[in-house]
Length: 463
Ligand code: ADP
Ligand code: ADP
Ligand code: MG
Image 1 (cartoon, rainbow, N blue to C red):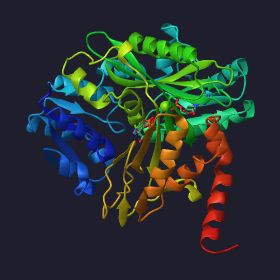
Image 2: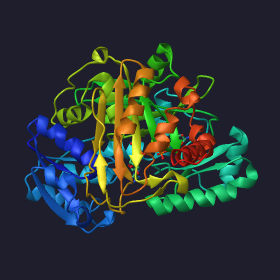
Image 3: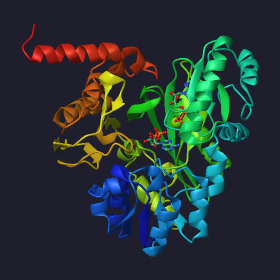
């Protein structure tokens, strides 16, 4: 096993990694920015060091500082978590060059999949269907317009380096292309320092279905079933569940096989996620592969009973996966609601502040992954994710009931969160039937927020 792991991240995912290491008797080194001096990950690791000022570019993205911290503390491995350096191939290479095991695939694999335009080509070469669109990146708006005319509108212009729903614009006709091109490009440059764009036909009313992959250095590639992440705001996930109501056993097997084929074609090692959009007619298309642990990985852990972070550590240590494809059994149903420090009434604007009071749900079948505590000040510099609340139960309807009661127990005071919006979604007939797609929240947000306001007024005694 590994001896000492540096965690190049913060928040709930840093805690998640500390927990897995503890249970495997692996020491941990936490790094923190000046804004995170009192953050839990800095307190709970075996050791912790400051790596720079609050701004992520100066601390959690500061490769020199993180690599020196790992060397100075005698670490043998680095876990990048998600976000920050987790999909940076140069960082993975630099870890390897410094004699540190990078907990994830090699720099070459990340490079192959990190450009989403190139990943499409790779998936195609493995026989995995991709959304009709460009072969590789586009040079200019004129080329985009010509191609869009061939594949048919509406289309999406997407950043090759994109992530977190950024760098993407829709065009409904040729007159939209110039604006979409400029906006997508500007956002891609601002967010990722890379303006490269490619084109995909917009799949209308799709579900977002993704498959969890685990692969070891011995050549085993296994999938752990799907997660349905179609409840999204601004193309970012809010509620995730497994299994998906949209898949039949036959379709699940076909998509699982495609996900494994895509990972194999890339020479994948470690935990990863193959993302698809599923059209209403049952056709599915690869959209990207995330070469890291995913925010919503606990959904899969609950239904499979497999600890994905421990498997990541095993694989990085050179051990084979502890299970085979036929050992993966999905049991019951799991749902995750992401509670973000943001205000759904103000276009989900991030609203960091001091956690004046915190009460976390518990009891049978409930899991909460969070780095909050009463008195904790959420810094404004990073992601707005505050807590992931999960419920696991024998059936989907029981999981929905359990999640409702978990959210009723959750109290986060000091700033707005989207928890009551999630609670309303769990009461929506379309959600309960499992008949929803990625447009659900955009189409229903105003109605749900109005319902919440009416309920609040009535609870305060107004008619
Ligand atoms: P997931 O399905 O794991 O949520 P996301 O694409 O939403 O995947 O990203 C996970 C986290 O990483 C989010 O908190 C997001 O803000 C962050 N993130 C994603 N891509 C990038 C990137 N290129 N640079 C920095 N942070 C990113
Ligand atoms: P990111 O790297 O930001 O996660 P993705 O390519 O995974 O970007 O897309 C994010 C979301 O945007 C998807 O979950 C889906 O809702 C939507 N999306 C992406 N591509 C398409 C497409 N071709 N047609 C319809 N929706 C899409
Ligand atoms: Mg994605």
